[in-house]
Length: 137
Image 1 (spheres, rainbow, N blue to C red):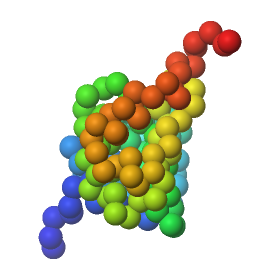
Image 2 (cartoon, one colour):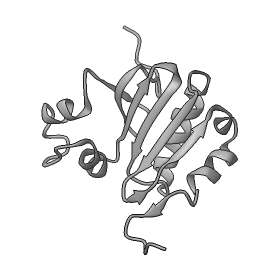
Image 3 (cartoon, rainbow, N blue to C red):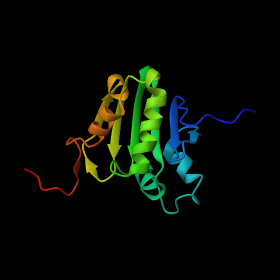
């Protein structure tokens, strides 16, 4: 049996570890979390699990639509993992919605945004994301 390719996305739910390993989830993230309680003790939902582990939640839908949840947009290891994941799967992706814990809003990336690391980094630092506790205008 050949080893799994790093950052190799499959349709449906997955966990992306910072070293590039992908854990395919049969069903939903929350079911998988409840059957693996020792990985992130006390986590009962995807957000809590992502916060405790630093793993990235990924759901790849038909038509190249990818939803991601990450713990931090500013953490170098998280950004590097996201870039590797997205750049290696760019040909299959049409639209990516990235949600960052503790931030209000999301970042939407299109296929053309994945062609350049500079463009990706600029979007990751987007003012579209605001801390949840920021004063409201």
